[in-house]
Length: 261
Image 1 (cartoon, helix red, strand yellow):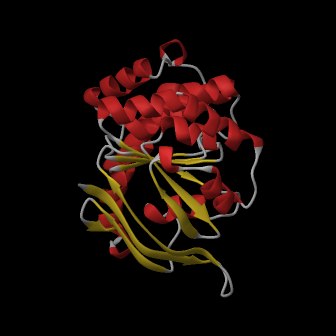
Image 2 (cartoon, one colour):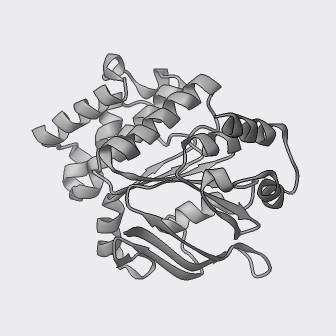
Image 3 (tube, rainbow, N blue to C red):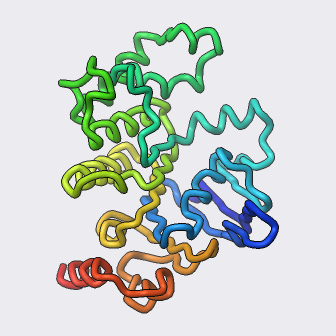
């Protein structure tokens, strides 16, 4: 069953060149989808149009039966509580602790006054501590986020998304700023969240070999259009060349590892 339907999605930042050009695809419940493509292809714009952080120029985004692009302010707030977002640069409040940042994921459920005062229920706090444990952050729960490593900060970002109780998590280049070991930990957590919590994940990636390893399906974006939409095992050098316009070393490594497994 489709949780997310993108239909003819278009976005113009100027009148001449579309950032997104007639994008269409579906995402099934419980699916792990990787979106790949060169810098400037439209990957980040795509994710931000899905939850309306950016207003699309045309098309449709249907999430769990709701038309996101036509939703009023109240409806959009409700929709966004079910769509978690993980950012490349974390978007944390550095002076606050791990637990405080994660609880910020509940603000979409709060009145303005409750949010400002930081009023959280015991159940919300219990859930936040449980998520912290799952993400391996128990030893850092009261540590300020400006004292954490990049990988730890990204785990806090994932925790903030999880505490929303989302049906979908959108991840915009979540490992682009991380070293290989921290990146592997983040991707393992995202894959486990999809498999064990049954939360749908859509993640933008530069690393093709990572997409091949972790994703159920890969969508390749080139110049604002869908250039590939299929299983990882169907992503061959010709398709990669079409998406990126050139062969790079990591693509050969990715395909070699896949074919050897």
